[in-house]
Structures are given as structure tokens and as C-alpha cells.
Image (cartoon, rainbow, N blue to C red):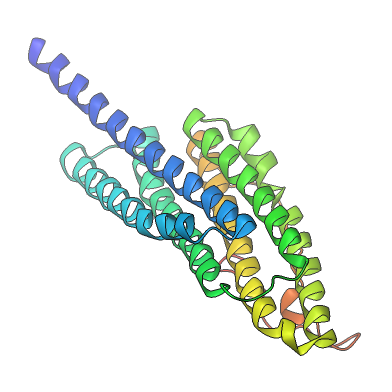
Length: 249
């Protein structure tokens, strides 16, 4: 009996270690994203460099989660709730790793913008970023707390990020057409906006995974999507071709 309890206890400890590492990874990815936005807002090259360097820590934690999850699958052969939790950890760590990459990409654009006067749409980009950051932070909390209802509510908020992205896309194009000197900085901001929009998509993916872990069901209904930037220049009534560039919608 003592040996049996030890086995169960060690199994629980392995699952908790997996969850803790995933939480650390999520916190770091979210923090790096926030600092990238601050670097953009303040044009802080030093801070941007720190964000780029810290992305390696996100990658390292991703490898740690992957290794721990594979070990649990191989040695414990989990079933039911435990199996969903372990497989979900693998999926969420991949989403967080991509979020970390996009945060680093935003920081790299800060370095590229040096010497270019920033047009006023940079403020819109920062506001869009903080909206996506708020959703991401709450999504990570909902996942770690096993709150399916909250995860679904956050899943539905992705449309807010998409709306801002479409609006910012049009605003940046207008600035580029009005003054050729805006083309370079606005081009960089277009990439920043797309990176933010993709972070929103990956946060939505985490919400879907979190909902599934708790309920063993997919979220019902069509995934909310309102980004129209890919065909913002299309003629009225023109058939849209493809999606917004997102992996999931």
C-alpha cells in the first residue's frame, strides 16, 4: 500500500510539474508581449533587445513542457481527464511558443523603426496590442484555473482584435497614400499589426483547448472572425479569396 501511494503521489507531482511549467511559460510569453508593446510605444531599443533575447527562455520552457508531457505519456499511459490534460499541455505550449515568436517580431520592428518619424497610427497599434494582451492574460488564467465558461467568453472576444486590425490596416494605407515618406514606417507597423492579430488568434486557440480540457467538447458555433484586412482594397462586391492569413480562420 505504501508503494502504491508513492506511485500515485509521484504521478500527481508529474502532472503538477507539467502544469507549473506551462504556467511559467505562459507568464513569460505574456510578459514579453507586454514589454514589446511598451518598447513600441516608447521607442525603447534597449527594452526591445531584451524581449528578443528573452524569447529563448520561452523556447526553452516549450522544450521542457514537451519533454515532460512525452515522459508522462510514455511512462504513465494516462486516460480520460489526465490524457486530455497532457495532450492539451502539448498543444498549449506550441501556441505559447508562437506567441513568444510574434512578441519578439514586434520588438524587432521597433529596432527597424529607428530613425523613422512615427505616424499617429502607432497609437492605434499600441491600443490594439494591449487589447490582445488583456485577452491573452485572461485566457492563460482561465486555462490554468480550468474555467470553461470564462474560456468561451474570451474565445468570443477575438472579433474585437480583428475589428481593430482591419481599421488600423485601412488607416495605415491612407497614410502611405497621402505621403510617400510614411511608406517605410507604416509598412513596419503593418507587420506589427499582423503579429498582434496572430497573437489574438493563438490566444483564441488556447481558449478552445482550455474549454475542451474541462468539458471534453468543442465550443459550439462558428469561430468569431472579423478581420477584413486581406481584402481591404478589393472592389465592392469582389469575391474574397482566401482568409486573413491566420492558421485557424
